Amino acid sequence: MEKPDNLSYKTKIHPSFLGTKLAKIIEDFFECYVNAAKSSPAQQSHDLIEMWLDLVNHQLESPTAFQIYHRAIRSPFDYYQFGLNLIRPLINFSQSQVLGKENLTQLNQQIQNKENVILLANHQTEPDPQIISLLIEADCPDLAQNMIFVAGHRVINDPLAIPLSLGRNLLCIYSKKHIHHPPEEKSQKIVHNQRTLKKLTELLSQGGHCIYVAPSGGRDRANEKGLVEVAPFDADSLELFHLIAKQSRCPTHFYPLALKTFSLMPPPHQVENELGETRQASYTPVGLAFGKEIHWTQLPILKNADKQTQRITRAKYITNLVKREYNLLK
Image (tube, rainbow, N blue to C red; front, side, top):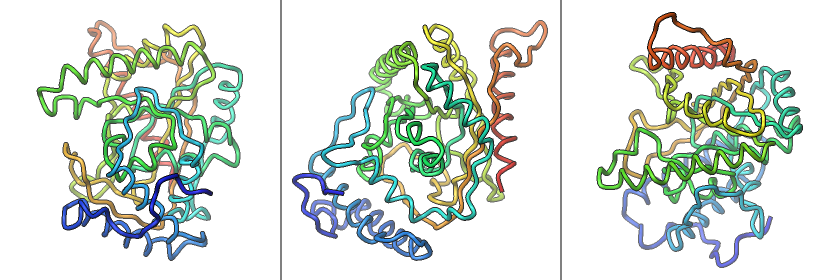
């Protein structure tokens, strides 16, 4: 793999950030990653984390401005493959799981038939897109590369996350958890989200796309007892995606997807509005579970309930579908 142009390949933090909070985060993650990767049979982990640091330094000097719909950058530097290579040493593949392969095969065939698939999933770690690709690339190589992820603002603004984000197809959106912060940017963010949803409509009308979305609006967190729980899905977000899918000129299918990836790179205990979160890495098994297709006409209906109550009921039902798949993962 060739290195990006105009990068000085030095294992050091950008001088302007020495002594700052970001520098400490980078130092800790660098050391943590190297120690975690020692348990892995994968090679060149130290070279990979050094390359990641070069890419971070490049972002500090020349930040990438992401478009509403970002296409993965594969040349002259292959950011997609770099992201997979960086995360690969952290996964214990011998103990990892992919459940519901018959459902994965079905949805992959629907995509090949130029129909759409929307994966309603939980979200646990920053590199979930890379983990998904690494676990399905043997069975569905095209899907692994072409999947589109609905991404929050953090992954396209944090210089530590951007080297991985550049290698993915992203629909960039502001989640409800962050759209009000800061208040003076709320209207601008709403307009941005409207443009993103318009682009989603265009993509679904083209057909042949797989969209990953986390309707909870963020990552799962550990509860007070230290147990990781699947965060509840937002009812309005689910209904919005369902409405857009109904308006598409191509058939669109919905599937529940459960991810058990938390231990690889756990999120902070609380949602943070500011960029610059601490990162820890572990060598660990991970898991995916693809559930059966969701048919909206078969979802439970409450008699005499108002529209919002019906939406909340459907959201709880779909959340429980993902939880059920999640609980099957060891």
